[in-house]
Amino acid sequence: DAPRDQICLSCHDEYQKTADWLMSQTKHRPQVAIICGSGLGMLADTLKCQDSFAYSDIPGFPQSTVQGHAGRLVFGELKGKTCVCMQGRFHMYEGHSLCKTTFPVRVFKLMGVETLIVTNAAGSLADGLQPGDIMVIKDHVNFPGLVGLNPLCGPNDDKFGPRFPAMSGCYDKGLRCVAMEIAKQLGVASLVQEGVYAMVGGPNFESIAEARLLHRLGVDAVGMSTAPEVVVATHCGLRVFGLSLITNKVVKSYEDSDSVNHEGVLEIGRLRSHTVQQLVTELVSRMEINNNNTNNAV
Ligand SMILES: O=P(O)(O)O[C@@H]1C[C@H](O)[C@@H](CO)O1
Ligand SMILES: Nc1nc2[nH]cnc2c(=O)[nH]1
Image (spheres, rainbow, N blue to C red):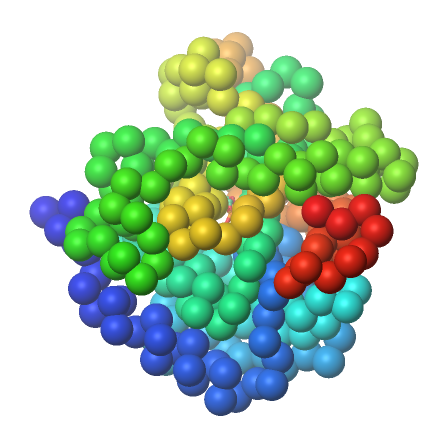
């Protein structure tokens, strides 16, 4: 039955083995981890002095199977910070257990990462959010988690965090404030706003009734990822920043003949890749890591 499928006891021992293997293959010791959403893998291209590994070569790593998810782990330097970037993430709908979907987050923690930046492509439910806009995630609704499809199900690993972790404020307010400031300075404030992200299981996109329900519930954008990674990151004490690239308007009217497809999602990713890259790069450059004294640090 599904809940037991989520209890991947084998992951318990794999985290350290994978972290040790990676640390034997690269001299980089990342402080910031970046998870690239559909069509956003180009974020990794900005890293300098890269060491990169195909997921298929990394012990314990699942495989990316979705178009627009390259399946490479890229280590490098970005604005003086050592980063690790996932070009391609894992989704529940690919058939991965939630333990495997979130596996990299705990590996990053064991490698010394302190901050997780998570990006995704999402559909807009809010009237003011248009395709091409960027939503800074203020909070999330983890629908699968509400019914027990949660990566923390099963025996708690006290080494990472508490049995009952709090989730209020899991999207760091300081980082959100700086991101909004950066958007102004980049001249893209009109494209960027905060909002609530909802994760649904997918892989189908929403029916009109589902879209209308989510909208009534106060959700601004909907996707098929991100929440499980953020739950695990929060559990093990990582600071989290998330953004959604809005790739389409979710159809909420029975009169509307529009429909969404993955190719269109990836097209918006290509259109906005530079802006997302600028925002994330500038945010990383202002991060305070290990108590360095840097201006505008957060
Ligand atoms: O990996 P993300 O959440 O960015 O990808 C979204 C959700 C689906 O995987 C895909 C659908 O087009 O976009
Ligand atoms: N669930 C969901 N995920 C998306 N990812 C990109 N667009 C969408 C969408 O409209 N719905």
